Length: 385
Ligand code: BEZ
Image 1: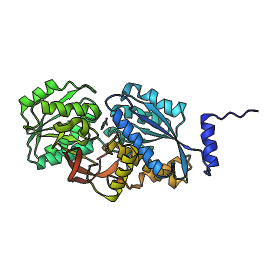
Image 2: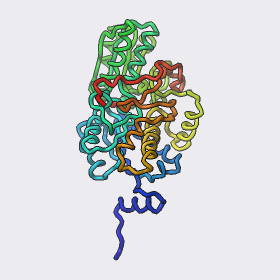
Image 3: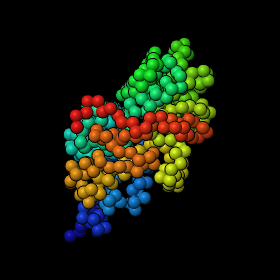
């Protein structure tokens, strides 16, 4: 009788013949591959695959089999897209996503099906706050973290008033709330929070309002294609030289080539920077550029790379036996990750405890200036783990 292998049976046979006792680990990427965050999704996948490739194509001796879904950064399609990976493809590990609203749906689907989820970007505070859960981790940040770091720097710079501006969804709200918290704690005042719907880029009326409010500084959360347009429009409106523009570092990460002169000199806070100049980061950047010469080694690539490192830490602890979910998750939670950004650990809620860097745009680099806040832990408000 002719033998027909299904996709899964073939992967299992390959893994077993390669000497592992277990089938290939099935990793499902739920990421944006279209829309304003498309480049971010691509960089995350690249980073993840680069780390696996550096380990000889395996993690803890296990073959890795990839599945992927374009989530379009569309929260309303989140449950359906998550279930494609969980139910149709039967993935062991979910890696996703970029957009906080989509991540909320993904985390719910991961919890309902008891699937391990590593979030390689989306900062939704609630996921490592009131909705924290033992199967969910981040290799990235909470939205609060860069905002809080930048608020402290703005106050140090002597700014007394600020306007915040962002898209009107969780990431924008939480990032600007983080800024407001540290800025006002240090005596500053956020005089107005301006918003527009995601992913709109009609910034002109809001820029006119900023010009009339005349704050000492502006803090913003935008990323991807929207960040390119915002930085260009801010400069074109003549505001760049009169009102300092600060941001969560997504404002200028992976975007500098397109932003050009309009971004020069901007200060942002993030958990990654150009010019860290550590052997670990230099090696990562060299490998990344060799493999993906068209793309900068940005924060998204690092977060994807570290998601693979976190999975490897879990797999090592169970000798590749993915069915030992609790032991694998405990190992991820207690891992020390040797990241290109600098070593980090995870909080009880599963969020990186990490240095937040102040960076300044110089040419095509977000150049490291200093550590703005050392080992910053998200407060994980409401997390009961
Ligand atoms: C978010 O939605 O959480 C997000 C998107 C892009 C960059 C950073 C955060």
